[in-house]
Length: 120
Image (tube, rainbow, N blue to C red; front, side):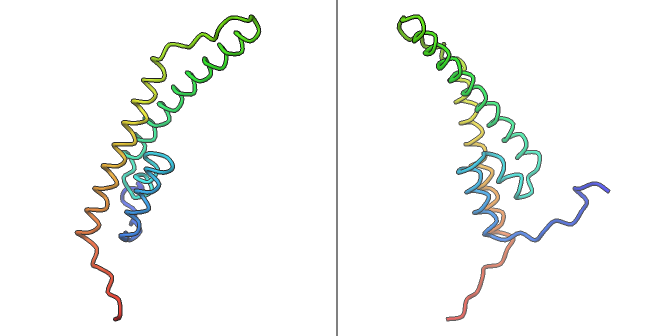
C-alpha cells in the first residue's frame, strides 16, 4: 500500500503555525514535510542542508588557513567567498521557499477548517 493512499491525520490551524515555526526556526523544509507536503519538504531540506554544508566547507577552509598562519607566522589568508555565497544563497532560498509554503499551508487551513468557537 502506498503511503499517499493512506488516510492522513486531520489538520488543524495550529499545525500550520507549527509548520511555520519549524520551517523558519529550526530546519527549512521540516515543517513542510510534517504538514504533509512531503516532496516539497524534502526538496527544501535538501537545499538547506546543501547550503549549510557549503558554509561549513568555507568555515573549515577559514579555520585551516588561520591555523596555518599561526604555524608559519604569516597573515591570515581568507578563503575565496564562493562557497560562502553559494551556501548562503542555497540556505536563504530554502528558507524563503519554506516561508511561502508555510503561509500557503496556513491559508489553506483557514479555508478548510472551521473556526474554534469559545463560550463567552
